[in-house]
Image 1 (cartoon, one colour):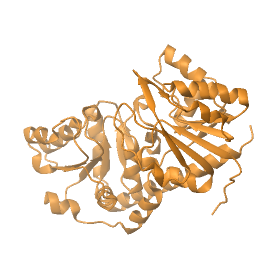
Image 2 (cartoon, rainbow, N blue to C red):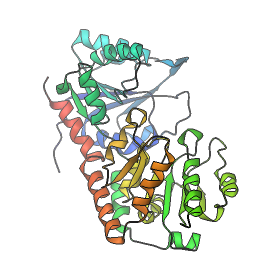
Image 3 (cartoon, helix red, strand yellow):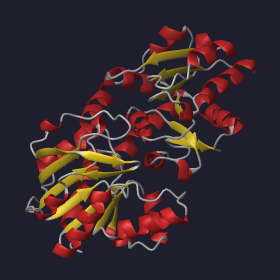
Image 4 (tube, rainbow, N blue to C red):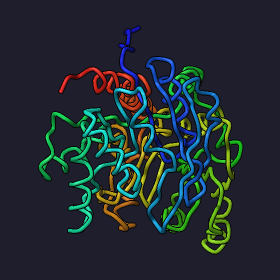
Length: 375
C-alpha cells in the first residue's frame, strides 16, 4: 500500500460530520496527522456519526445561525494552533470561515476547501460572492470535473483545483459486492419475472417519484409489466402507495420502507434492471453503481448533485430530458430490455467506474496530493 506523508499537521473544520462520511474521515484519521472539529447541528436534521470514533477528534463547535448564515464559536482560535493546513467545507454561508481564511493568509498558512464549488445556476450576486470567497483559499477540492470546468471559466487557476469525487463505505461495499449473485428477491415478492426499477433514498416531493409510478402505469396500458421498489422513508407524506392504488399498479409497487442493511440493499440493486431518480441524483448513484445497478436521471446538470458524473451514457446509465416523462420512459425501455449478457456487462462497467474514482482510496490519493503539492 502507498505510504502517505504525515509530516504536516492538518486541521479539519466542518459544519457537521454526516454519517456517510465516517469511512473517509476514519481513513484520513489513520493516515495523516489530523485534528477534527465538527459543528453541533445544522438547520435541517442530518444523521451524524460518533465523533469519538476518530482518534483525532478534538471537540464540537457550536453553530449559531442567523437565518441561512452561521458562525462556529471558538473556531477562530484554531488559526493560532500548531497546524500547517486547514480544511473547511467551502461554504460562503459560514461567516467564521471568512475570518479564518483572512487570518490564515496573514499568517501564511494554507487553506483547502472541500466543496461543491460551482453549480452553473448562480446569479450575478452569488457569482461575485463565490468568486471572492473561493479566491481566499490556497487550494480547492471540488466534488466533480463539471464544477471545476465551470470554475475555470470564472477565472480560477486549474492548478489549484483537485477533483475529490465522493464515496460511501468502500471496503464494506466491496466485500458485499464479492458475495452478490442473481437471486429471486423480486420474483418472490412480485410473483413475476418482469423487469424491476429501483429507487433508494428518502421519499420527498421534490424527488418527483410520482413520475416513476406514472411511467409504470403507462407501460401497463401498453401491455408491458414493470415493477418498482422504493427503499426509503416517506418523510413528506408523499403517499406513493395511494398513487399506486389510483393508477392500478399497487401489485407492481413495493414500498419497502427504510433499510439500513447493506446486504439487502446490495441484493436489491444487483438484481434490479435500473435505478431511477427523476428529480436529481446524488450518492444514490454511487450506492447503485457500487452494487452493479445502472442509473437514470435528468440531464440538466446545473440542477444535479456532483455524483451524476459517475453516469456514463450507455455504460453505467443514462440521462433523460428534465421533467420529460416520454423521454424518461424511452430511456427506461432501453435498459429494461437488455439481455443477461448486456446486464452483466453493465455490472462490470458500474464496478469499474466506482473502482476508478468514487471510493475512499481515490480520495486519499487526492488529499495526499493536495497536502504535498508545493504551490
